[in-house]
Image (cartoon, rainbow, N blue to C red):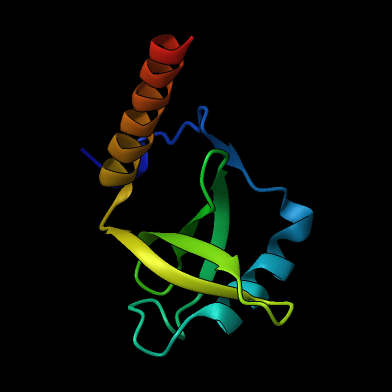
Length: 112
């Protein structure tokens, strides 16, 4: 099965990033990454944000992988960013997004 046939569907708690602010996020994330991060100096594109955590999903255009990055204010008007997880392909991304959706729904039902 081709990687492109794995259709990516963003469901809560993930939402697509507005295209008009993508360039701003790219610059902030690049400035906030340490040299030791596996995506440092790679071409990135912010696809989605996880609403219940400070997480951004990035498409890594350099090698066609995906990264989930945690971000936090650095106290100097910028962000500190760190890679939480690298997803090797669209199938892994689709599975992660589905799991996060199921987990979020379960928590909602549990705490009602």
